[in-house]
Figure 1 (cartoon, rainbow, N blue to C red):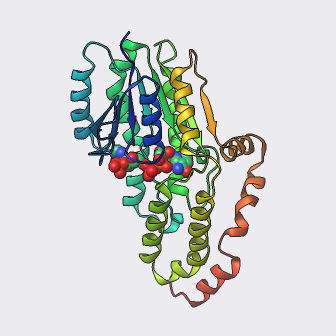
Figure 2: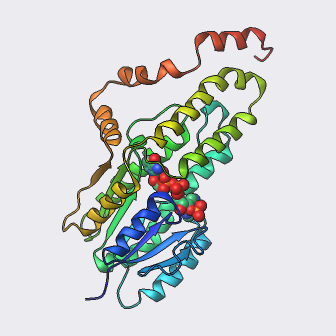
Figure 3: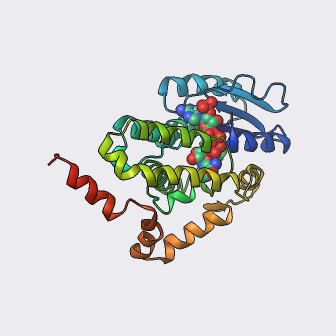
Length: 293
Ligand SMILES: NC(=O)c1ccc[n+]([C@@H]2O[C@H](COP(=O)([O-])OP(=O)(O)OC[C@H]3O[C@@H](n4cnc5c(N)ncnc54)[C@H](OP(=O)(O)O)[C@@H]3O)[C@@H](O)[C@H]2O)c1
């Protein structure tokens, strides 16, 4: 029998890159997609790079023209919706453009690619794997935009799974915790840009705690005990299992977040974060010196 074909988005780096390699090593034919994919998998057997910007419908259509041709005899069997970015910002400083960029990549992009893949997946009785995050269960301050996107992806996955219940296509969610990938370096530089663009008043309120948050998050991720390989193994398990589960966690921290979201009250969850937020004194000092309404 010929190999099952899987499309992995966000495969040029980090988790998607590791998953593409592991799937190819385990007998899948892999379309590895990203905006900058040229040369990433040069000469890796079983992996075909494909240029794709998930947030652009023209790019999705062009990528699927190629996939449709390549899969004319045997339809695509798996889709791993993994492409994503992380925009950290206090919500008071978050521009509409940055929120759109976050949602276009992590939410709208996933919809566009899923819609394009479904004619294949319905024919093959295939698999959809949506990569979200522990932050799809608990909204974290200063990661509001990212949490909004991850909650949306969780809702998207639940609705889609129910709509496709009788289609033969399964929909699974994979929620990783912190894993040391290039996303964290990009996270810090985006956060620093947000702060650099803030006006004096908001920088005074949020600057100290947001800077500490950026530093601590990147340091924490660099020490993460969960690896890209752990993530790739989970993706392989979902795509290899005869009947995949609906939800998977990768890492104890992600599992803990999911558990806390189920068991703790809103007050308890708030208490986990507020000690790191701007103090009443920081707000009061700015209010005293401000001539704004
Ligand atoms: N690492 C973690 O700690 C962690 C934890 C929880 C969840 N996640 C999730 O896991 C996924 C992968 O993250 P990662 O850590 O591997 O990040 P990463 O190393 O930064 O990789 C992100 C991938 O997404 C691609 N991408 C970004 N924008 C895209 C677009 N518009 N169209 C197509 N591809 C795009 C990037 O490639 P190009 O820039 O070349 O397009 C890259 O291949 C993300 O969805 C993230 O939210 C990560």
